[in-house]
Length: 176
Image 1 (cartoon, rainbow, N blue to C red):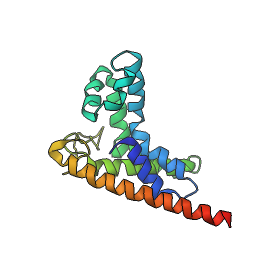
Image 2: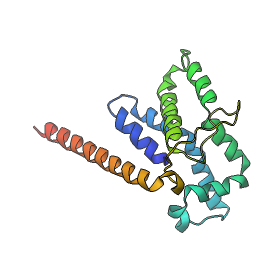
Image 3: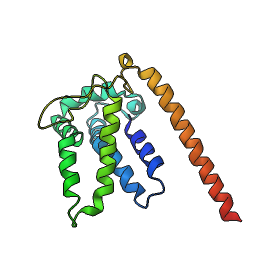
């Protein structure tokens, strides 16, 4: 799933929680390294601003070997053992305020496991290189990406319509 979609869905399901933005931040956390990569690619002339909107996930992944540290950070960010250790540490009183970020991060790992086909993450890094290949992918044509995008887009449109309806309803209540 695209990074912003992770944030959208976590926002949708946690919007009434007082720490909603921490959940959203955490849900997008493992992919922030690709924002850094975009900045590097732009600054070093590998891509231009006009190409930015048309870069596919496959093309993006082709740039990763140029900056090997990006791959390491991506592996750490998508690692269930690393996430589990951070989650366990978050029960300590001194850092328990970041639990919502860590839970959001965990939703990212779960959703990625459900939406990554042949290019699945190494979820057990650094303990192993096993992957969970989902039968669907959000960008790989041989893994039902066209159908996935149609269903996912429909769900996002419905969720957005619901959010707008909820906002409109609350706005009318405030006027009274």
